[in-house]
Length: 111
Image (tube, rainbow, N blue to C red; front, side, top):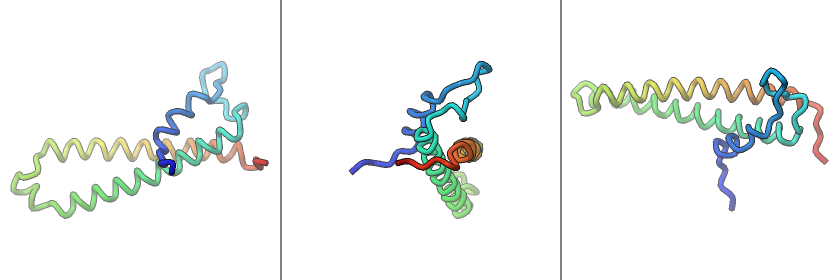
């Protein structure tokens, strides 16, 4: 049984993308199978981040009493806010990356 690790797989695959002379990703020159794998990883990662951020929001909403009485510190809330913000930005980046990959492989048919 192989574990599904979209973040690890995405980080391993991204350096394999070709670059243009301006150091931009050259999606048109990339291997279509690589683009499909990157899009799959990015979409799975985005889904995991959205679910996780939603779960954190639910936990925060239900822990208002512990926040009020100081059981949960302001530093903890601040750290959660920053990580939730970064996860939201990363999820948006994953969506854009997946869209670029899917656009380039719209007519790709692996044999």
